[in-house]
Length: 267
Length: 299
Image 1 (tube, chains in turn green, orange):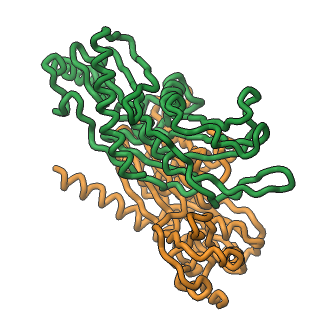
Image 2 (image 1 turned 135 degrees about the horizontal axis):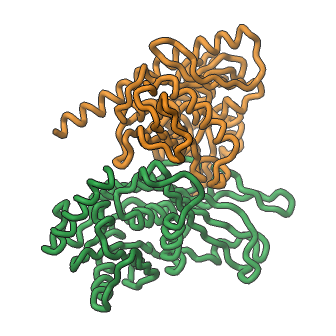
């Protein structure tokens, strides 16, 4: 689709939004269909492929042995990287991650990190010397809007299915035996992002591509099982009022429960 | 039981390809796209952990891998085709899950479109660009996301192979961008990517002389074989020859080789590769037909 047709689409999305309606006839809080596959990339220690209404993201977890940070000798570390591959959208360019990819990775990472879903102290191999570094890589394959929720679903599903590699000692030094595992990576919670856009006076869940383009503002909220909020990111140039934010948080908790039930079925 | 003489470490015959599943039109934002899963279907089985030493011995000879312990059981991944040949050695086992060990590539085509930067445009033809990338989790040791020299080289030879088949003179001053992402790797990723790429070009509706069908052939454990796995690529006498063929005219548009062979062996490898590339071409055509059947059904 070229810029000109997007302008028409945006116009239509905005006109409908003033009546509280959506271009694909969804209700304001409805998600598009979600399909999740797990353990599909055999070299990953955990992996997932998510198709959220056509937005497709592949995630893989790799565990490596590293040294702990000097100020946290009794903790491992988790890291999240995302690439907006040029595959996913004609406007994405090859090259190192740009600001959008970095924002995506950091927001997904914060939701997981701040929930303490992964006990970093359980990632210690030898205190002060060797810890697990858990890398989650997100590869965006098809951008049909709402990359945040698709990436968050993919990351958490890959982590929830990840296994811890077997370790053997070569003298003093622990080495990974690739392909062999000693147990599951434990997750105490399922933190998930839920994203909303504000279009005129309407607030919609799970924005599709035309809705992303027509949006005044975007907000992503990570929640966990007990209804706590673990990360928030407001995006785009528009704004939210206090009342709107309160409504968004309430809906985020509800939509988080909806998504969590879907994830729990596949892990 | 000794390995029968006519069976490879994964249970295939010498001239047999791995399973190849091609799907066209898998992405919405691309003008054309394809996904190819090229590998071995496996069974994850659980056995008595006291057999660990025995299984490690078997793993020297067959393409089976230990997957660690789960509870009191030892998990082993075994290609489906070798399973009947080693059942006696394994003794009693339970199948826990199905697995897949092989290459997964997703390819998108954007274009023909405006060349950016402008100086890459050619006033007489469209320029095909190819970018091959690997996901960090596609290989045993996490790969850093930035492309390395290997990926740059593969991208170049793939681009040259595709340039040959596109009717490029119909779209002067444009580029056709082909992006290939490898999500899982087990020997033969470039031929997987190129096979997917030519389906994605056709899916994008770009006029082409023919498809490009790619495959590897070579030598492992004393035999000339088609479509080597990582296990065979690591054989002491391994020779790997990735190649891409225009099936209608039998032109070779990509050919690489490393190893050491006689001229006679090289001739045999090329002949085997050509025959196998034609099998790949059949699967590519089938995938394209299936996509259009789907389009018609949805109308």
